[in-house]
Length: 218
Image (cartoon, rainbow, N blue to C red; front, top):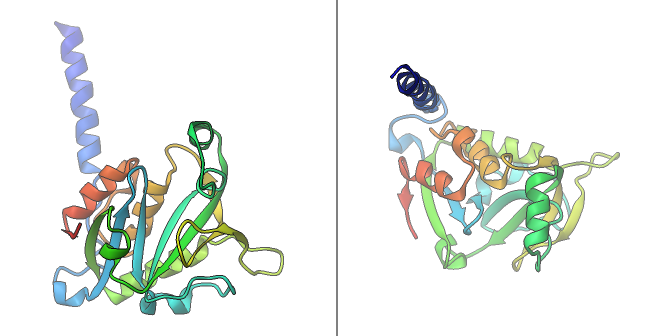
């Protein structure tokens, strides 16, 4: 009887540790009043991974200059493995390599001038509202994720996956559990939004956390 009781106590300990670790809102960035959060931010799920999008006007002044940087009313950002993410025909082998071997990362930037639910018509999309200050912090975080060369300019990586999209070399190494999903959750967290990146291993978890304080628009 002592052994099952010990297991129950350990399980309870870990459950309490996990539930108490959920991050709440950063109130000075994410105020309770919706009227103080006028900036729409979109979490876009493509199945295995998620990205984050925002209207360009809120962060354009923060992004690094590059002749191939997409220019559009809405910009979507995704982060991932430099080999798997940029390969339009990547197979299972590259996927497993990306999961277990730390590799250099890239940022995928997509520009669109149509409503995001039309552009990504087959994706799940959650819209959340953040403050202008929160959007500024998010823009700064994204800007700092671009890898630069000796002259300080950001480094182009490859053609993007869509029209008006490009890959740029990024900071950090990709490996499980440090994935595109946790990166997106960390990016959203910069706005003060109540999301816990530690749990955001899967795209489904990111969507689930975002929906608690956002709206599923597709």
